[in-house]
Amino acid sequence: MKKGIHPEYVECKVSCTCGHTFTILSTKPELRIEVCDQCHPFYTGKERTIDRGGKVDKFKKKYGLA
Image (cartoon, rainbow, N blue to C red; front, side, top):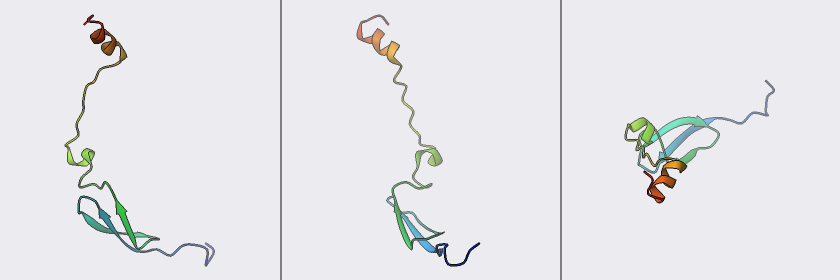
């Protein structure tokens, strides 16, 4: 590796909008994020799935064919 061309890594404080904070290594000293592993639906298990149906189901419903 060449010397003097790589960015220097510093300890970075990451803050989420949910209030969770943690530290990582980064080129920036502070990061603010909107979603983390503590509030993301995939990791919390509170994922909502809505069955809206496809285009055919909407057509049948619209014209009373269902």
